[in-house]
Every structure is written in structure tokens, then in C-alpha cells.
Length: 153
Image (tube, rainbow, N blue to C red):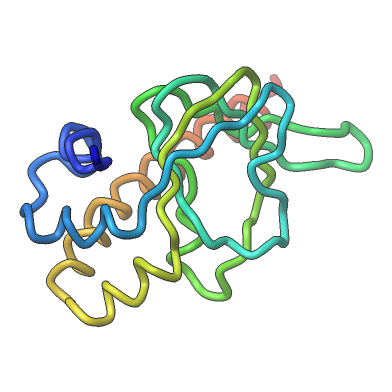
């Protein structure tokens, strides 16, 4: 039976991770498929997974009563979706919806959190990797805000 280990080992987010840690992570992984238009998660729901996108495109949105859905980011092949599983109270802060048929690997947040608590070296390694993702998203948000609220003179 083939596992997800070779796929995860080659993904940029996990590339170079010690093989013993990769084996632990694979134990929390499963394949998932989302149809076009299907919500992957919604604001306020329990954040119990993160996703490695293998194929397709996902939009991350927030909702405005005046403007309706507002696109924050998009995620596509090779990218990681979701870090709320790592930060208490483990609730999604945005909506995520597949724009087209999307295949991903879902990593169970509860499973991973327990492994990170047991092995702090693994926890530190994943935190370093997620910190880069969070920093990139904050920078992208800053640029969006400059675009929206920039100099209007």
C-alpha cells in the first residue's frame, strides 16, 4: 500500500524535514477532494486541519454585509492552506472555497498538535515553517491595504 510520505517529502513546505518527523506527520494525513464552489471551511468553524494543495485553486474570503464576499488570497498547487489549527482557540478566521476541482492532502490538526506536544523539536521545526507562511500572508495583506487605502491625492 502506497502512503503519502513520498508526496509530502517532496512538497516545498516539508522538504528537508527529518525522515522520523515526516513519518509522524504522514500518520495525520489523508487525501481530500473539493468540488468547484464547495466550502473547505467557514469563519468560526473549528480549525482542525491544514491543507497542502496538490491541484486546483482555492479562494480565501471574508464577508462584508455591504460588499459581500471579499477575496483575501488564493491558494493553488504547491501551496499550504490554513494555520488557524495551530493557534488557540483553533477557529477559522476566514472562509475558504474551491474555485475549481481541487485535490489536497489534509493534515489533522488535533493529531499534529498532540505529536508536537510530545516532540518539541518537531514542534519547533513546524513552527518555523508556519511562521514563514504567516509572515508572507501578513505582508500580502499589508500590500492589499496599501492598494485599497493608499494615497488618494
